[in-house]
Length: 67
Image (cartoon, rainbow, N blue to C red; front, side, top):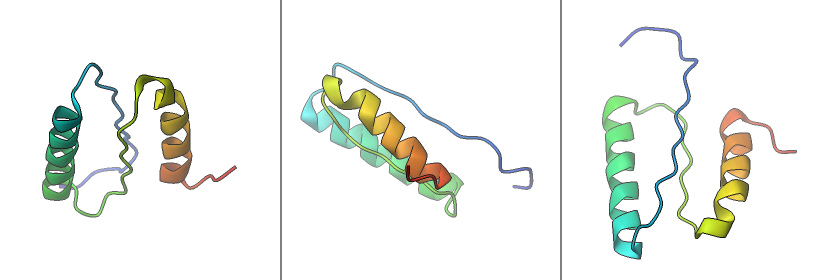
């Protein structure tokens, strides 16, 4: 698939059990590997109070800024 690689994807899904979160994370990883095997990615599972810091740190790591 040709095209400019300038798109990013992020999402937060809440109110999940540990098993549901793990299954969804696995499904997302499999889909990413199928559709964009060379794309960079970062994923994490956290409790509600950790969402903001996980998103901020993950975004910095993904775009290569470790400030």
